[in-house]
Image 1 (cartoon, rainbow, N blue to C red):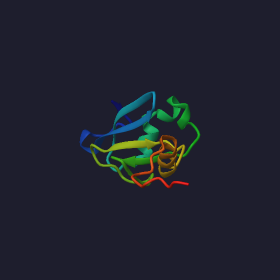
Image 2 (cartoon, rainbow, N blue to C red):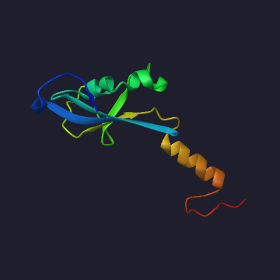
Image 3 (cartoon, rainbow, N blue to C red):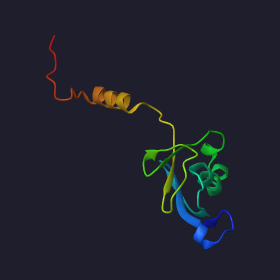
Image 4 (spheres, helix red, strand yellow):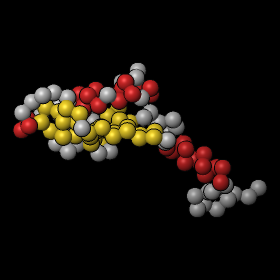
Amino acid sequence: MVEADPAPAADLIEVEVIFALPERAWRVRLRLPAGSTALQAFEASGLRERVPELAQAAPELGIYAHPCALDRPLRGGDRVEIYRPLLIDPKDARRLRAAESGDTLGRPKRGR
């Protein structure tokens, strides 16, 4: 566990910062001062330096699968998630899979 700032134990909260790629995942537990933000947790995690994909981009963050503002104050036990950009819109991906499989989503095929 990483302590970002020396402070009395009563003034610290414990949070996690998570980032996942298809082939690997990172989980960093932190103790931060109460009132710390999602962005501060991301920066304190050190993941920007350790993961090349995070080096340049402004992070898209969420807490327990709910997107949040970078300045959102954290509560003890929060899990800050770092989101990757979508490579394809989920609706388009579904349409492509259906087209490739010949699935008509339960609709009768039109004959010609």
